[in-house]
Image (tube, rainbow, N blue to C red; front, side):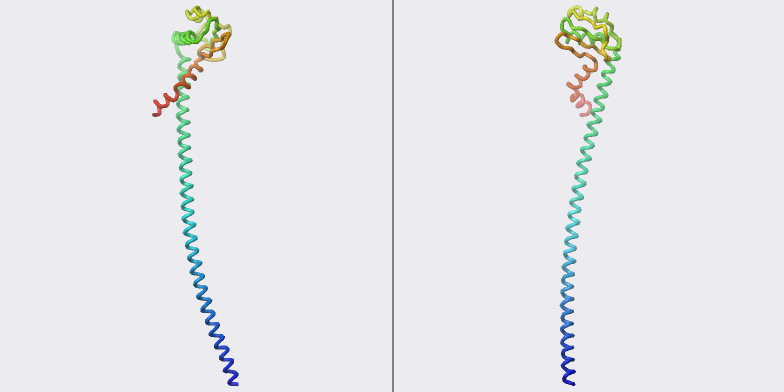
Length: 191
């Protein structure tokens, strides 16, 4: 039995050597795979961090652009509000002129724009009367008449003609001034 035991011992010894060799190879393989996985994970993590940093910078850049546009939009609106307030106050100042200045202004506008035979429609503010217009040289020379009813506007007059009507209200005078000169005024005010 000694021979049999020796063969069994040899088989077991060879099997143990082979098992140890297989364990060694498996451990080496596992270490290599682990190292490769670690390297891949580090590279992937670095790439993701770089991509995240780039994306973050792009988001910040876009938000800065949007914020800049919002600032410009708000600044423009504020400037527009200031210009509107200036023109509103100018219209209010025209409406508050004393009668002599008021009459002089509307007679100058009537002289500039009236056609012979036009009818003058007075404003509802009552500053100028029918008599003030009919006794003026402009009304006499252009044969103007004054409407018995008043317009539904404050400040200035309207001319009702056979061919066309002309709006000479203070609101329209200021509006025309605004359309013609608001960019120039904005340059003077805001640079």
